[in-house]
Length: 266
Image 1 (tube, one colour):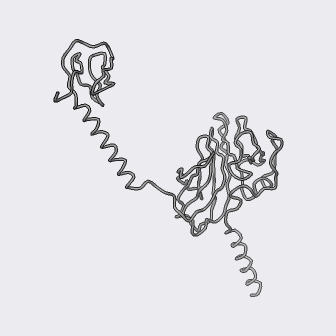
Image 2 (tube, one colour; image 1 turned 45 degrees about the vertical axis):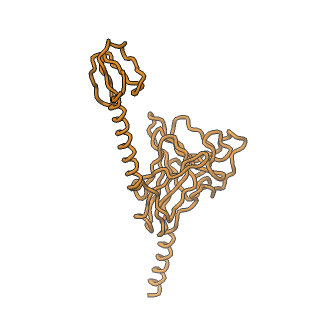
Image 3 (spheres, one colour; image 1 turned 180 degrees about the vertical axis):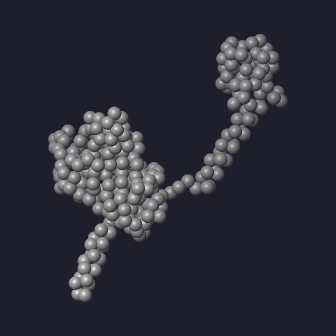
């Protein structure tokens, strides 16, 4: 009975250890120092370069440069290409060329905070980056920017308190420099109905304004104008087709070689 009680305690401790939060989200928790002189490339084991993260490729270059293959690299402030976004280190994911067809990714298993509403991160993208949690793709959108990066966010309220795999992937022929991954208690802003309504009203006003300009002039039959000549007047830049049709909006209005002579009411 006593042994069974001790086993239950040990199981509770082990399970509690697995339900830990995500770590090293800014990639600064590393045992390496920036490569020097600039342009130097060194190679490290994953456990030394990126504690807490598991890359799709085992050996991690510091300030690496891909020659066509997939690569996961820890970039510092001395990197000649893709220098660190913030702090001293950022992670670069580079998918391979089309011929090699290999993605580059990093993943970590942890527990999303109970209060988390969104996931945010800094990135400089050469194409796109895919983000997923427990195999479910997250929809990311740009929510801000810095001097040399964009801030992206994804709503994750439905996963709050869950334990699973967080995965960042650069597809083939794409690259992503990542930094400052955070879980936030604020949701990611989304387009509101008011903004959409304003856009609709703006489009409606534009179309009415265009129709007004079209109605503000009339044509009188005159000699055929030169092919594709533009006329000045109430309708500047009216395009005359070679067959003597005027291209107005999306419709062709025949006028038999007419000429814009005066506005209606004059």
